[in-house]
Length: 84
Length: 493
Image 1 (cartoon, chains in turn orange, red):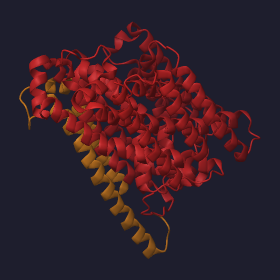
Image 2 (tube, rainbow over the protein chains, first blue to last red):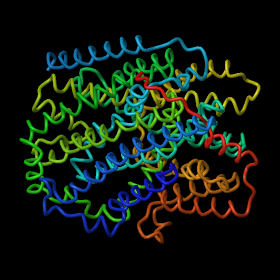
Image 3 (cartoon, one colour):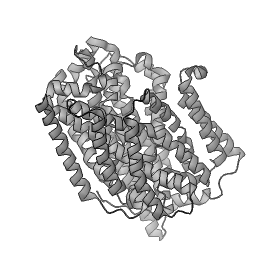
Image 4 (cartoon, rainbow over the protein chains, first blue to last red):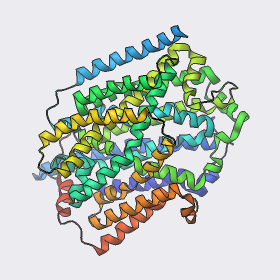
């Protein structure tokens, strides 16, 4: 995957997660106390889940981008260029 | 009571001594504006991470937000959502902002605006308004210090005296050590409220409620509506989360975080710690506050409830520790704002008005302004300002209006000066009118003035992009970002 592709994927993931916690019809559907999930009240569970998923994706994004950058650097070394 | 106060004051004084020693060890002599403002772009990822965390998480989380958790329930947890979601925006911006900063020697957010749109006048107006929109938070944090010192010392040190002593300490190290001292302080303070704070607050949750599950049972029985958004949900909740997310990442301090790292990879690496810290700090402290309304002796002033519950279940040592946590959060935020604001005024405002001034003389201005802005903040904080929190939130809604100019400008070549300047002005107008006269935007069906302003702002930028010419150097800037070869280091500090 290219850096552009990774950024596009991150945008989609970001919009989906933000949508889950902000789009009014969705939040209204989630805005309940029962049933409890893993001991958390229903809405509280999503209030924790969304930032946790975002944090996990940020780590994946960082590692993936490092991999792309390193691959680009190796390629440019082979070609003798300096584009990273 | 006096012996309890002595224990608490002793804890706080000991913490101040640790701060002073670490800031002294990590500090460097300040010799230039670049050193003073962005630490010569030399910060390793760990120093940058905690400097960022320290600057971002404010002391009000232990006072105002804590009180909100007790009175309006889970709605207060929007702080967790936007703190993490706005890091996505930081990830997007990190490389272009860092590369342009490095190549063109940018020190402030205004420098980036001038470089991207080619206008010194727009830079001046943009920087002035951004500073004005941001400044109420400096006052709020300075006021929080007074609150915290008074509550943590059982009122043996008064509000004004407390805020003067602590603020003078912060002003002192910012004046002497600039961005590096602010970051070193942020490192100690950030580690304190991230690691010690989370453990201490979790211990309190167990002592007060018996555990998280028991706390939820208690709240469900006492007032189940605290566990839902209820009437505060829908478009209002969405507006708050979205505007805070967008606004948070165009604050001038965020640009300082990006510039002072030694590479864009270091920025991203340092940002990886922030969501974890945000979730843990926000979730534990706001969960502790969630069930406190069920206590019959819950204080009349809910802002002091974190200290009240600490004293009730942990004695004076816990009150002292809570004081340290809250002071750590306040000091790290104030030092970050002071340093960035003094450089902003010197470079973007004085530098624009007096273009003949060299960076050397602007550096001297920045140092003096650190003291000037700090003293002004203390003076205003000692006054009784009604509705300061409301003013701060309205200003935040205005801050959001700079998001399109920066973010769209970084990724879209067609964005141009007429579009961003008119969009910014119209967006700010909608934010102000929508907040001061909510009836005027009733047609928006519950969306806030800030949200309406952002949408109109973006529409104006898009329309102007197809009707006006872009800045002639824009291709050069985009090519610089695309082709710049970064050297990555693994430096920690």
